[in-house]
Length: 504
Ligand SMILES: Cc1cc2nc3c(=O)[nH]c(=O)nc-3n(C[C@H](O)[C@H](O)[C@H](O)COP(=O)(O)O)c2cc1C
Ligand code: SF4
Image (cartoon, rainbow, N blue to C red; front, side):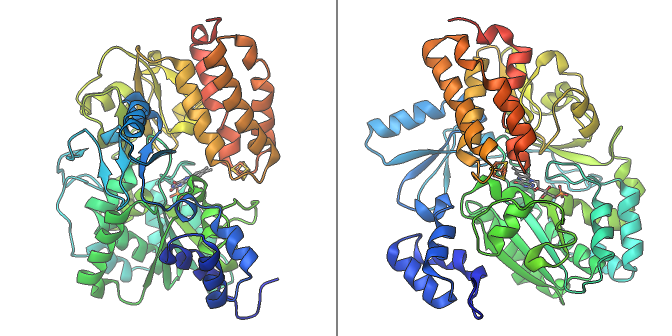
């Protein structure tokens, strides 16, 4: 039971400030927050950055880094006696193989220069452009009624860019329709899906747009407080936002901005897990309904959006919903596509929502080698054969192919890749990142990973014989998207590349 004066929300930030979970730190945090020691311990031990904050190198083992030699990098570090460990994803696929040192600085054999679409002021986000501190969209929004702002959003056709593609205006309307007046805006800046690094570029290059979008959202739904939940490794990105607030904060008067650094758990990108984490608990997804727009942060109506979604808002307010919509093809708007793997210029490209792989790769300098497969939207989307290179990369067209646009983290694999190995790497990711509260996901992700490992060692296809049943269990019996999609990489690789799973 929670003590009357307990301040659970401070538990994780304090543990981080004191250097992670140790007996002494847990005792100190329990005393300060009045949360029971066992609960402080229980919450803290969920998070990688709190349980293993030591002075070692973290090597990314996401798909793009593995394609570029992450395993060799780990082996070389071990040989040289450098303390190092493999981690699920660092959001640096364009610099693969990437690693982070103890100060959270990225190091990579690839050039530090990141590729993005060159400056084009017509684009809604325009990563290559110069920051614009006029906050003109916010000024315009201040003169509009909440309903008028939401109408413009509806006209824009903006779908959430965090993965599900849910129409943004429906969420804004839902919060507005709640009787409760205490409302919150939460920014999901916990980007962690392997293959995805677009939010990182938005935060670094256009932090003013993100803050302006958040302010418009707060104004529209009647919130006074905005919470930014930002990936723990995003140090420079956090500083970029704080610098704008420091210099230009007068434009954002009347809104309180709060920053919460994540602690190294992919699942906290799931919106309800994120809320649990923000409230000082283990990042375990909640059952829905109720949805966050009804009962979210602190049990109050909460609008949660992805960074890219929010960064589209200023252009929508300023230039009108119809103008935003016109940037897309069958679906609305421009889209930030991340592309990495076997292409010449991995990066983030703002293109019409609905371009195909060939168009995206053209922007990224062309294919490297002979392309064989691609993953269209992060680990959860599985794989498609290169024969699908002309399929529009949008929500509907990818769903029709049994996959998804997700976070638009596109990874290209050329014909040097063993698809069984690619499926194994993704399975390892899901096992590691399952929060463990649903038995089908907890057991199923481990089973699938082990089966693929055994297949890699023995080359006997019978080791995979029960994986399809387990996939069904995970899909049907999991409460969040992680468990529901964890079998996708193996499923899709087997479907499209059966030759990769024969007797060896
Ligand atoms: C396992 C899992 C991980 C997720 N990770 C992220 C993430 O890192 N960033 C994000 O914005 N959304 C992520 N989402 C989606 C969020 O739950 C949520 O739909 C999103 O933040 C809503 O914002 P949007 O409407 O702007 O897309 C994830 C979902 C799942 C199931
Ligand atoms: S499906 Fe997996 S990750 Fe999602 S809540 Fe259940 S155990 Fe946790």
